[in-house]
Length: 331
Image (cartoon, rainbow, N blue to C red; front, side):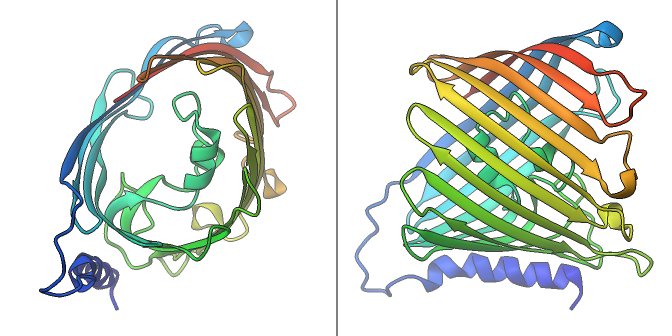
């Protein structure tokens, strides 16, 4: 079946599920009220490099998300979000992408999402890291996959300890919605074996659109522990055939921790290591480190002064040092 036909069938099937789940004409009215909420999120920063990176300084509006979500009876939710992002290698030009345009349905332990929706590839890690406005989670930062795409996800919680999810996506991400032959298939398993623990394994395969290319395989493992006073997480990621090129693999590890001094103040640190097979991507391989503090000003604003280092794998490239002041406004 052609890709566009399969996606259409999946979306139509998802759209009919809420009606199919009805208890019939004699069912009692759903007590859930209708409710709508605006979504406004802004990420911005001021930064300055030191030494050879001294010219890299200024203010930046990294992201602006604007949208709306509306909850309906029977566990149905509609959500649409536009992402206003700066074009790569452009100083001022910005463009709006539809980041989310989804229908979600929840029933007992089952959750279905259809449309332009969040992928499941690194959603758990991003949530645990919890500081997207400061730095993207590892797979997002180093282009292991997209945070949103056109397709369908299904998640089911079998017990308080075990849940699983599967997904079928376009494979190009929310900024490239071309319909080509080839889909991305993903599946994940999440364990919460004890209070505060989260363990997850994930695998996906992205079919190649051309016969001369090789499909991309992603493997990921994550473990994290969270308490009220602190949290610590670690993940390992491996991608085979990056850019649909045979044997062009890359992998990496990320470790991050947060210590909560009180309700309004926390200290955090993160260390990333990225490498490629036979050093095919020597220009981007290396180590990144970040330490800083996070101040919560009320319920909507966060500020984070932090210090960063990038140590490139190439021996002739000096390390880069930066000071940042990141800010987040979220409604």
